Length: 260
Image (cartoon, rainbow, N blue to C red; front, side, top):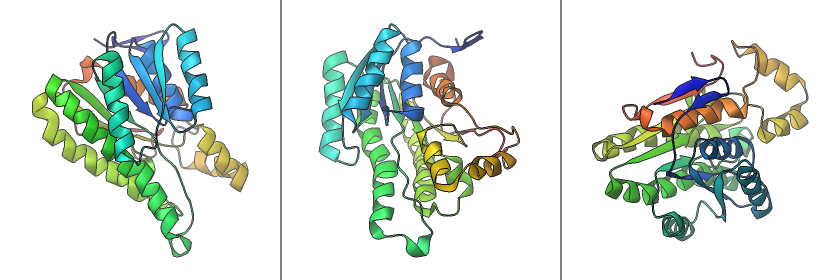
């Protein structure tokens, strides 16, 4: 059972194995840390080996177990090998969090083919490749949790982010379709749509547009503040838990009421 304790949500993921993509910083780092705190062994996936090593050290220092795995999430062979390597090391795979994502923001008339392809390939193709590889393992085990990290941009759209919004909306469609395919094998598939969260990506936008960006963002958020990575991570932990067995095909917005 899941309980809300003084330090946040507590679920029992002891003995379970998770893969978290885009785990080297921001939301992915918070998600990997939270799953480890709840007892899961976590394969932390990203391209930046140095940052991944730091994330794993932090998890291990807190008493968790983690593994750093560098991977190009757009490459089928690399993804398939990574999933095989996780199975070989820990003999199971229970949780997949598809979080890897990039932005290449510009208005559509000025958007290059590469800016479109890079975002779609990383954000959507990468999630497809991991979900396909993981679902095969989970179907055989008749248990699994796939959690796709979408965005409010995938629900509402956002000027200058046609590529990003399309990729995140695609994740929602993939989530709903795949949930129907896997429900009979006791594998749930859900999406989380974060709003404005304080991460490295947000800092890039502040550097580009100034503090006024944050002020304007807050006017669009009923909660009148930005979210914290931990607030998204705890939602991931709940959907990854046995307590969420009857929740599948849903999109959980963690956005301070933006899309409410």
